[in-house]
Length: 426
Ligand code: ADP
Image (cartoon, rainbow, N blue to C red; front, side):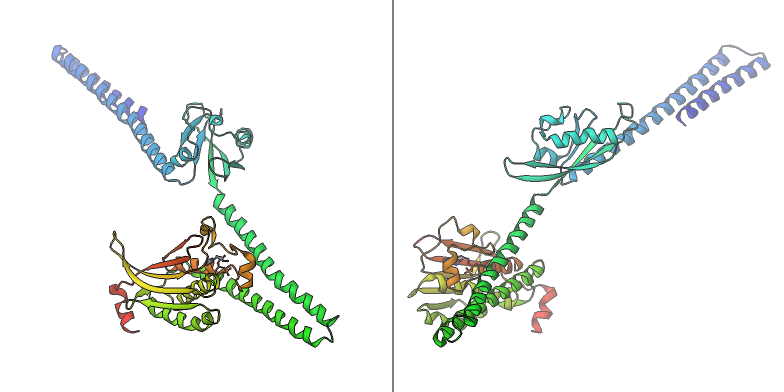
């Protein structure tokens, strides 16, 4: 079309000058002005043709430029690393995610300078040879262990400078968190089975003893039955905790919206637990400075208070005191009020290396002591998930010999126009 338009302009100009010359010849006036007019027409034709040429040549350049910026913007917004190399595995283009992962990546430098992964480099060769895409793995150890799935594919470049030779594009997908989750799942199943198998093995042992050697030994039977009851209770508690954990996890992404009074919930739980604590020689006190509404699920918050008070009583030691309080705290900034529940004990405290791991499932500082106290190792994991669901924060402050304070804080309930009616109806 570009050439056609240019040709038509030239043809029109030539025809115009021929017509003018013919007219002049027919009139017998082929003189200087006529010759000038013919030349001007030719020149005009040239200019118009030139303009068309420029316009039509500029159009693909502009659209190629636009396409290039769109491609760049697209690349920049892909969160996973993307690298484009030519058929000699020299880097042509990379996106910011690739630069962040491989700071040594440089344009026009061989990819192998930055990515020392024989599987990936072999993969590029194979893709160029066969034309079929393939997937391989790339793992880093420094600064942290990470694993990526690398998808390698040929990118046909029909208009490219290398005469239609394809480039190769590499997409890296981070598998690190998926692998970590998988490892956690495997660990969790192994831990849960182990926790269940221990009391189960003890139950089976006692059943066999009662059927065999202790068949007619009444005092031994009484003793064994009491132990069997404790073990069966332990299994029930474990199953209950596992079920609550999975129920809470299922709802973790849906925060509660209705207001509940945390002070009232905490007082209720302290009253329920006080007789048990007294039996263990522990005094539990409660303090709250008024009503403290927060968006919450009553049953879940009761579990939070129950687990924290139970731990403080269990690990705080006989003759100790446990102080439970609920207060309103205004943060500066952003001047938003939070409702804070604190449970403090005067026990032996926890060494700092354990503190970050206490909310992991089945993590205990002292496994035997936790089991003796009827612990499942899931209490703080449950607390953490409930706190997450309530968009709260959990902080454990402790030092050996200095007791432990566990603080959970939640955003205060704020009356929105949308939930005013709902609240009024409660
Ligand atoms: P458990 O069922 O074993 O109590 P948790 O998840 O509630 O499980 O607690 C995990 C571990 O944290 C406990 O086994 C214990 O070692 C430690 N722990 C929790 N609370 C306290 C506390 N108040 N004082 C000392 N250690 C504590």
